[in-house]
Image (cartoon, rainbow, N blue to C red):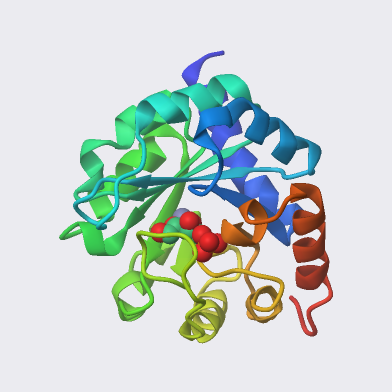
Length: 239
Ligand code: DX5
Ligand code: ZN
């Protein structure tokens, strides 16, 4: 397929998720990497419609996970859109490589570069959905200037680096502020999302909900996903 077609379908695959919000995206960090194909099939059968891939470099965050080979392996395993979260210092160095590996969305951290604009522009030029992430302690003003360059904003509700952390409730107001600043942006929240915390995030305007422990700590992934989806759908005042 010519790049332009695949480029169009990649970015569109992520933008289209918004139509079916609230969307639960399993975070591939706490899954069983020794049985990745089995895990992906279980998630597909659980009805998930995209996967969130947590790439960590041990420099921007004090943890190290996986890189392009695993993303490329997942691309061969599934048709699900791959939402790649780069917790990587100076991410511009790797944007092309993750696009080639099959990323449909590439999200970089504003805190990981002096100026995220070159990385955001390159992601757009390649044709993936353009994402910008911000940690709980980073002033939101720092990213609002970049909103026009982004398809997706990732509001972290934990400090990037590890699964299984407690939800940071500052994320709720931060979600509200981004939603108020741009109605059409794909708004994603990530970290400590559980049956107890998801409703507040949905009510604040989030579309995509990244979930690690609340799925992978459960024996039945389908039950976990359905329960989370139901909690998000029935939150009072969800937009
Ligand atoms: C943290 C990652 C998150 C995390 C979510 O740096 O970006 O995606 O894995 O895991 P839980 O849902 O367990 O907080
Ligand atoms: Zn993540």
